[in-house]
Image (cartoon, rainbow, N blue to C red; front, side, top):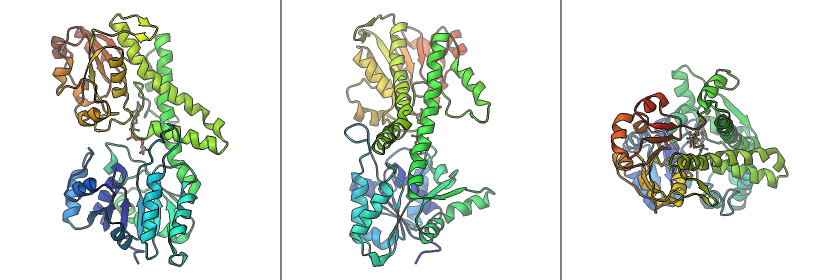
Length: 455
Ligand code: UGA
């Protein structure tokens, strides 16, 4: 059944699975989303997206109403419905801080396999250490009667938060790791909606059909490259800081070379989020296990450069507040600092490994009285860093502040009026941790402006 219009299941309705389930229903597929978290399933089933993603709530409600989309905690219902099952559960960083925790993958695959009664394709989407697809194949084989002919494939995703709907409906490529023509044709059918949409817009979606290991590696290689690009420009920022150069102009100038490209060259407080930091660590750990640790040793530097940017903000804060660097770092006690931003990037409510929140915690630890404001991330920030000072508005954050730190480039902050803010603060000093403000404008309004890697 289902070769022309397979019925799809997405196991794990976190950010990845929920977005995919909703978007594939939008493409016309009959979709079931599964999770063990009853609250999540209940919210999705009643039309509420449990995280912030532009455009998704409308699509959820439309497709629930159209009857193409269901959510369940019942694995038997999943096994009954699906011709293709996408595994979208989380692969968090292990407690030891390096490798990936595969226990959710194991639980999802095992409980699905136990319920399968007919031929189906199990497709891994989660970001995993290379070798996981082979292991999933063994997990399935252990539970399923070989006569059913259940197969495994791997198809990584490349969603960016804030652009996830577009990234699913209009991906810049599709990668599939397969072992058989049947798996390949099922995956083709499962993505036919994406290809058809592209055709109506006169586009083509390139497809890379490959083996399991390559498919798994594509994902971590892409994220490692992006992280490296950001740390490269942040390393240049470090050099600019001592040499008196301006990294934003340097980035613009090198970015005109199409071999380099101008994207992901924004120097600042560095990368955060649920993917880049954890993925480069897990990738190193896996390479080490495989005996190729040396090949990825540079990723350790990428990580260190990234973390140094956070300390740099504290250092500049101490300079601006005229606090000498003590043996245990600067003493900022008695100072009031407005931290603008908590999320790891704008247009998201995600604070996982967010540079902004981590800098806020460092400033707090150095003794400053910190007031954090973020347009979308306050609830999540309170969960992750409950002890910081949070305020409800931008005005509350900056009123009486001795220093303002812009650490996430929300439009509200980029477009803030330096004259108006200047009336509220006790001293006009600003650290632009994302190089997102116009230094001339702020200087003209009487502010002492410090960017990242700018004179
Ligand atoms: C990232 C990748 O971009 C996606 O392709 C990938 O699918 C995803 O991880 C994932 O593995 O699921 P995302 O975490 O949403 O997506 O965020 P990015 O837009 O990549 O930004 C990551 C971090 O880098 C942010 O903290 C951002 O502020 C920072 N960044 C980005 C910079 O500091 N400079 C830049 O030039 C670009």
